[in-house]
Image 1 (cartoon, rainbow, N blue to C red):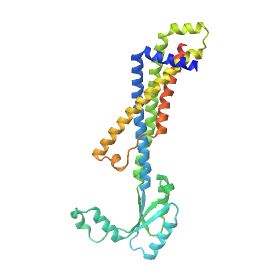
Image 2 (cartoon, helix red, strand yellow):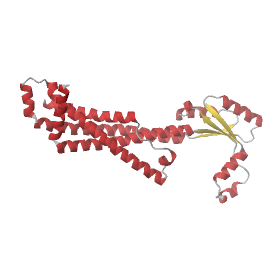
Image 3 (spheres, rainbow, N blue to C red):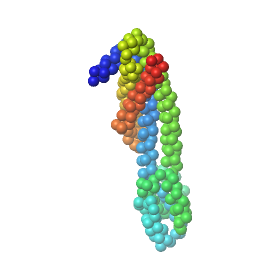
Length: 295
């Protein structure tokens, strides 16, 4: 306990001894971690968006014109018994026309040349959760394509694939930028700790003369780096929350896609704790690099 009090006292003394450098270092750490946090937020919300899009995927089977009622009933039975299908909705030609006219309400000029009902009857399939990935939907679509009476198939795979591509880009970009920012934070902390070590060389030499171990001498500097990383991480979370609330309000004001179609979510507590742990880890790494070189 006495050693811990000594380490804490020395850590605070080191921080106070280089106020300007320490503040600049913590501000830089907070800014770099906040930038990384923005990418984490983007990835987290895009991942949730992909999940919500997958839940809304419907496979539409357009039926061949002139399909007999018995064939249609048989086909519906096969679809209901097939794997991955949770619900089957039959849309007749007449209902398809009603829905089409409703979607173009107020645009009569587009409906004048429609003539006889050109729209096919169809089945709208809702898929079970286990079959909502783009790969599973594609496999099911290929199976349905060979069924008797099916003329064409439409499904929202393109939407999910496009968002998945963006999600993968953000994931890779976050990893690369996070690595660069992490290295920058480590270098900054190492430089700050190095200045502290140089300013206290006389005290360190006295400790060495009276037989203090290397670990005993190094511990306050290691704790200094960890504390700088933790404080920088806390400020980064505060800044990140501000950026999040600003983005959320702007998206809500303009009725943007993300703001209108899904609720933006802040990082959950486990992610925030991991975020702060990364800050502490960066601080410890920077300290180790500095004290191993100088002590």
